[in-house]
Image 1 (cartoon, rainbow, N blue to C red):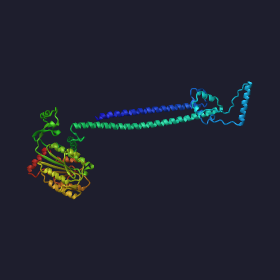
Image 2: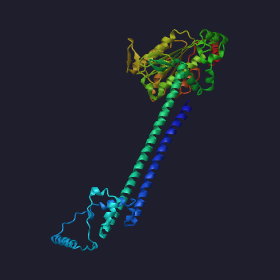
Image 3: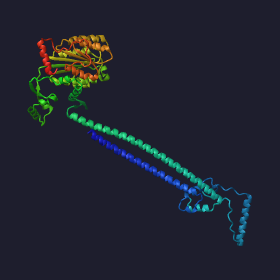
Image 4: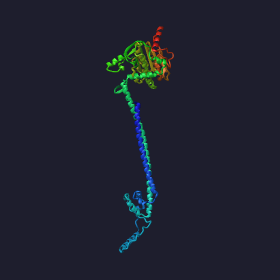
Length: 534
């Protein structure tokens, strides 16, 4: 399902990127078209500027109309400068010229056409506002009235106008290029951000869909339950997880220990009872299970309505698993390792002795009895009250009628606190805490038969090992010093009556499994151990 959702998300991201690539191609095409247009205008402008002579015949089609209009309207042109006032002699000559013209008209003599003297500037009265609207015919009329000097000046103005226009076109081309490049960079940045956002959203969508599917399946199987509006794990999920942890830890066990964990010999005595473990399906009582399912209104056999034939064993087992959950256990993944190791040991005990009594004890300043769910959810606390944990183990085992009583204690340090006679927890006095632990160890030793194993997580402080060795010696048990990664293996080895693989306390006697007995009783006990795979 995750792979299918991932492929769908990949296709959505691909379509999004294709859209951005299309926009990039369009932007590049538009920019190229603008550059081509400006290059064409520049080429036409250079071609017109190559022949400096003004072709009046082309004004009609507008080829040079704008350039000529601009050249005519340059403010510093001679024909736009105000005409200087004439002097007295010029006015006098003009007066006599007008009088002579009057007499000629009076006498009926025609006036001779006189050529316009070259070099004489002719002032053209062109208003600036009106000049912007000059048509081709008006411009042609103005050009016809110009002197040669004014025509040369107009040519120079036209050349300057064309050069200015060329510079404007070049600046426009550069601005267009910069604008296109900026748009391209912005589009690339937007594309990259859209890709990251789409991939992130796709990943979130895949995760949400897979989480929803997982929650649905786990809820339907009873592995998740709703508590106060939120989903929480159930005992069934922790138990299934414990089976997986045991399978993982079993791979690292020696072959003889691995065989020992599979269970003891057959007693030949069975009883019909409800299914408790998945391994018991091989002894399923199909008729009774079908009948129970029909009575409950179901057409199929499920775990709640299944009956199996369970072998009746004569040995009764009581195991107390104690673990330190003080603040120091939160370092180096010690507490999670202890939880996994105890889950594996719990399933190993249940697999070999389904009716065994198993107590899980967590201790810091205080001691609590936990089930598997509480074991997995517990958090690190404060100081280590080893004495109170040993006292709890004594209370649990002293009235037990089990024929095998095992105590496993996991810790990473010294006893740091103790409970005084008034029930108040005292901490900080290490000597008093150790004395209390010694006293509780002597009290627990009165329980028979007792097998005690202490697993000390390795540390750099040698005094921790000294204290652990003293408690183990008083209880006649065994001490194993290991690291969190091998904690589960060490527990399973101790449960299978194997040999420590890391370190054993010096001078400690071998673990006591039964009270002193005769030689015959010892032989019978060893035979029973072989039958159970010990």
